[in-house]
Image 1 (spheres, rainbow, N blue to C red):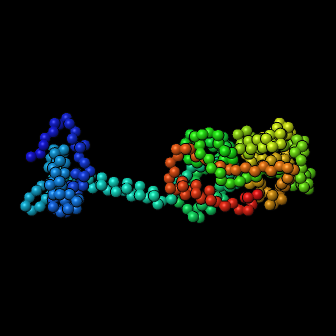
Image 2 (tube, rainbow, N blue to C red):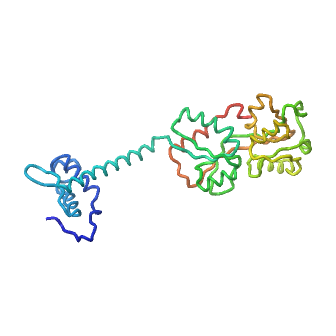
Image 3 (cartoon, helix red, strand yellow):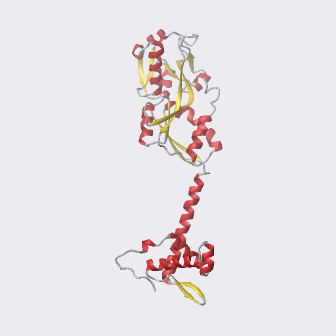
Length: 318
């Protein structure tokens, strides 16, 4: 006798996954004893699972006879959905298990101008040869904006030219960079072995925009190491990117202190010249940054491990 529940009470939702699995096993095995054995249950326990499901449904699921069992119309509906539910559970498990071995995925990166333009393309090319299933989406901005993007969750990780002060961000050193004085090949200093700092105060000088890590580092270095303020320079232009600074130098607008990575090709081609500044060596680090609570997936870890172990070429190490 089926237990009758009030019509205004939804007991259907009380049907458990184990009860549905008991029904599946009963149909597949054809008998209560074999189904119980398959599920590692006693026969009374399996029978109780079927009976409880029928009680919650308010209708029989199986017809019992000397000829065996068969599904009722209600049983057929429940059986079909039960199989789909169990299959979905198995698919979910497979996907979760795959996370432990699958290194593929999309990574969203914010990077300041120098790493985004001159370093990351080489790194990603090397990464792709070993991990073609990792795709990087890069947003380029100045270092301050990249830090804000990481904090806001607009990107997952950042690569910038200065260590962040915000305690919500983790920072790890990546690669070295050197800032150098660059002049066009026809410049009066092109044959000079070196210049002194005071020489720069007279020459038209191009700077990056405020917020740029290149400018931030240069200003701090000059102030702390040389007691020099940027206002002492003969600034003729302020540019929003290293590419713009480089093109302005080539065009003869002025000279500038710029990342060695930005002018590597032009130095090799003789378009630009690096002029040493006496007693001046401006070297900095690039940093990998991310939020303290960022949940690294396997492909994030693969990417981070790769870029941390990445060996720059000898030209990158200038």
